[in-house]
Image (cartoon, rainbow, N blue to C red; front, top):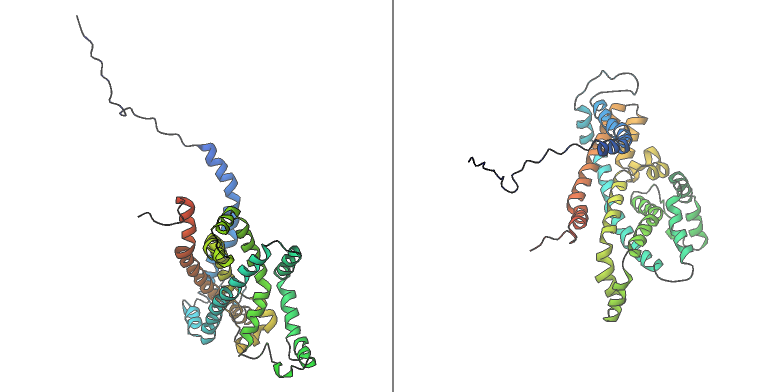
Amino acid sequence: MTETATLVAPAGAARRAPARPDWRKRGEITLLAGPAIIVFVTFVILPVVMAAFYGFFRWKGFGFPDDFVGLDNYIAILQDPTFRSAVGHNFFIVIASLILQGPLAILFALLMNQKMRGRSLIRVLIFVPYVISEVVVGTGWSLMLQDAGALNSLLEKVGLGSWVQSWIASPSIAMGTLMFIISWKYIGFAVILMLAGLQSIPEELYEAAAIDGASFWQTQWRITLPLLAPTIRIWAFLSIIGSLQLFDLVNIIWGQYVAATAGTSTMATYMYLNGHLAGNYGFGNAVAVLLFLISLVVALVYQRFALNRDTAGALTGDGGRKKR
């Protein structure tokens, strides 16, 4: 009698058929993301690459560039004290915007988050400057702040003639004037973001704090600010990038030539003046590349040390804190 041995494969040793690629899912992703990727590459990546290419030439803005100058444009920019001053102005605006707008936006948001009469009207009045065009805002403030403008005339009529200033042209106060206008225009956006963050905080936390006897300010310090931190970081990121790219208000109020002498020039106004108005588009493109690189470095550093905390907290559920 012949015995037949039956071989039994160990558990887990069976070979699994290779997973087939899900072509349907890939097709859906390509169909949905493809147009956005094409638009992004066409209108973001390609212009940056072209600007970097033109920055190596002395180019008048038409025809194919053939006057290759290498890094001369970049060297000239970095050696220009006017450009270094513009960079300093941009970073001053970054810091001043965070210091001025952040606390005020949080205070306004806390106020408007309370039940009170006229709350909707106050919200509209604070947000209206943000939705007004920069051209309208710049033109209006430019007319009011002229030496013979409405503000100085009002000061003289109320007996405060000693307060009359050259609000736009004086280097000692021009930057303060710019920061007031920026804060007036953009604080509404910060307030709306803070309000959205406040309304996402569970009401039960405040009720528990009230039962424990916490005061109003203790509640805001221990509950509101920690839970509002992700919103604050997002707003700060948007404010930083916007401050680095500031152009329209400065160009409209101070013009092409007064901004540098008044101490309010920015990297964008420097690019416009020395690139477009001077007809040296290769130089202007080199400035644009440096502006892009500076903004990119700042964004990456901020992403690394600030926004990553929110991403880690969203993925791990522990607020980004490492387990001990």
